[in-house]
Amino acid sequence: MPSFSVIIPCYRDEDKLAYLLYQLYQLPKSPEEIIVVDGANSERCREICNQYSVRWLTSEPCRGEQLRAGAALAKAEVLWFLHADARFSKDSLGAMTSALEQGAVGGYFRFRFDVPRTWPALILEPAIALRCRYGVPYGDQGIFVLREIYKKTGGHGPWPLFEEVPLVRRVRQLGRFQSLREPILVDPCRWQQDGWWRRTWKNRQLALNFARGVAPNELASRYGSDSHS
Image 1 (cartoon, rainbow, N blue to C red):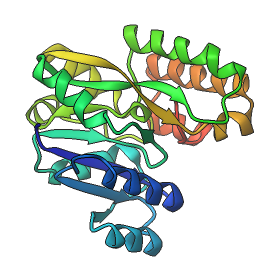
Image 2 (cartoon, one colour):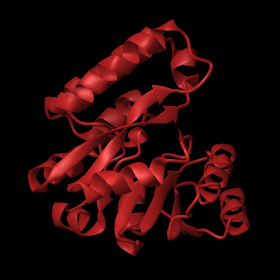
Image 3 (cartoon, rainbow, N blue to C red):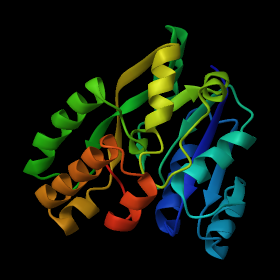
Image 4 (cartoon, rainbow, N blue to C red):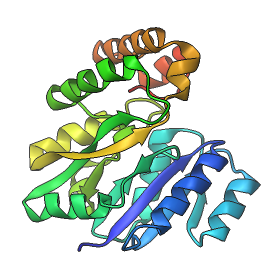
């Protein structure tokens, strides 16, 4: 099995981060290293990282910059980028290893809403899968990539939104970017709070404006810089 560096951007998500780190240490084989990049310079975040003996860095609160900072220090063969609220199966490392052994240079997990699941999730999940096949999977889908390939691409965009778009596009130019059957479970709380269809429409507006050339920093200030799935 190749070695893995897990890179986690965090911003005031300490409870979710603690559970994510617990999950990572329950895997049959632990990653070689875990790097948490804290955009809030939180003492509690640092304490949680110390508790789990993972590396804690501080950064400006910009997800792209946080991911770039973590990747710059990572030493393992494969970089695995996770959001703090991610949940995943114990077969995740094996699934990534299998894809890489079959010639992939990176990939992403299937998007699936966590419980409580309601009927809008059954419509949105296949729509997101279709978007990923013909467009770009976003960072909440556990993107992974060989470290040497990451270096060649120039990495994530230094932006608070859509930071994974240039990375995924360049990785696909260099090799096979594999979609995995295994899911990453995404917290549905924000969709429930905002309204499933209202949040979906807002996210599509973000994507359309980004495609039109509106700067990510402007989009973040206009709409807020939360998830854009």
